[in-house]
Length: 258
Image (cartoon, rainbow, N blue to C red; front, side):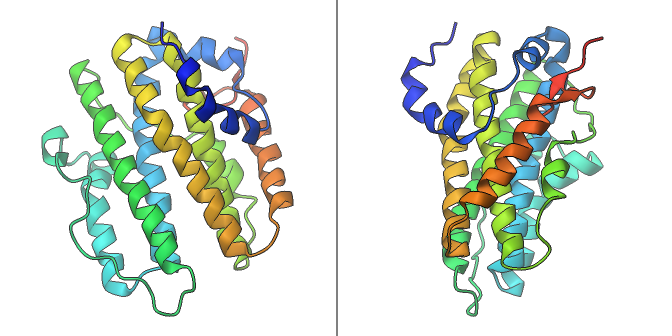
């Protein structure tokens, strides 16, 4: 069994940040062999969506027009695979890094910080996408699109509609999604086979840093105390995680009793 003692310093701040732990009922369900395909495919798509969310922030708030196109081109092979079933593991190899310049908008006060953190995040999320796909291919698990869970939408529907609050909210939500992902990898790792357990453990440091990057950006961009807004989304996130949910996914709530 995987020993997480060496990761307690990394996991404790995440456990403190989240308003509730993952329900044991979700762990019990997620560890069942019949759910491995769903867990892996949904994880794969979550990595892509995390990259897309970070890319949206850069495109919306931080870069010039040409850089926007460079970013879209970077993500396209992964989106083609996930949404149009175009490409394969072989065609995605080496596509995790961007090779073209990303230029900050001259009129944005936080462009470079946003670009630096989000470009690194996108690189890592796309690499994780590729790693999950490797595991799936090794196990003969064919990719099939799955519907998104209620989780992200349930958070995003409560975003402010005016700026800069909308950007701050988006960053806070990103922090919670990354923190929950990290917590779930840690909760699930001891119950998985050695290969997947080691993979999940390898993700903990990057996921923990992603949550901190989002939160730091939110604080810096807001330029004021955001603790009440952070607490608001923390309570909402906990409700989505702990309340009954009949749709099992990587970020789903407590499985409803059959």
